[in-house]
Length: 285
Ligand SMILES: C[S@@+](CC[C@H](N)C(=O)[O-])C[C@H]1O[C@@H](n2cnc3c(N)ncnc32)[C@H](O)[C@@H]1O
Image (cartoon, rainbow, N blue to C red; front, side):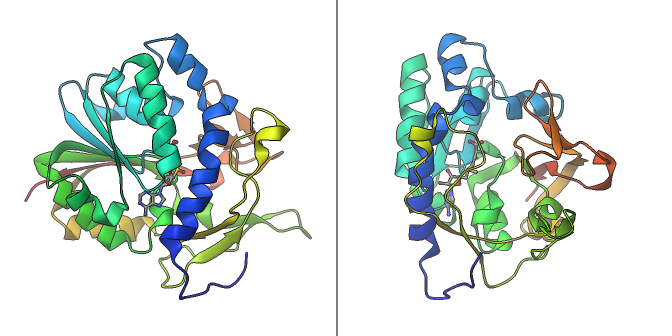
């Protein structure tokens, strides 16, 4: 991690990094793209995890913000929603379109910064806004994000989000003690955290595929209270908020145990730290 250059264009920096990651993720076993192609009923682990909370999405018009390579988007489409996916990364959307075409799914993919979503979606509004893991951290202001969510929802429409817990985003392994320590900001800060990492959060299909040329990213913490408050400020009503002791990737190798859904928990004392959350909210005004 290095200190931030306030003049840096975080969108261009993050887009270049996600464009590099997209083909690696599309080939990585953890994203299970081949299972989507082979089995017309296959759903992502993230969507399967939340099915008890998600409610019936059949017949809904939904938009998946920051949809990446579209595996969660396709899963919602398979549950009967008419889906649009939106993402900043053209390479991610190229993979998402390729996967949708291969399985004959009718999904509209739109390239845009989240903050420009209302215009990019042509002023359309939706019954469902869906957001899945690793989303808000790429945006400087959670209030602006909540404003966008509200602007693309119809009255009575709902937001469903599963994201990494902001407590998890504060943690790192302290090399000298071997303990997990709160190293990064929990609350939103004006300055981003600037990372320089040549790896991603899933194991690549093979070492040849590992190459990330654009290793710098800019990200921001957003506290859970900040996120909920922003949604309330923009006219959403909170319906559901569950914190989980698991997350569908392994942030601390050697310290976590995976399960059949691809969820990872701390091997020792998983009850001590929330790793992700699910939140449902309805637009009331
Ligand atoms: C961690 S991935 C989301 C992963 C997704 N939940 C999945 O499991 O496939 C984050 C995505 O956010 C996108 N992204 C980052 N900043 C963005 C922005 N400002 N507007 C739109 N998309 C953005 C990236 O291009 C990337 O595809």
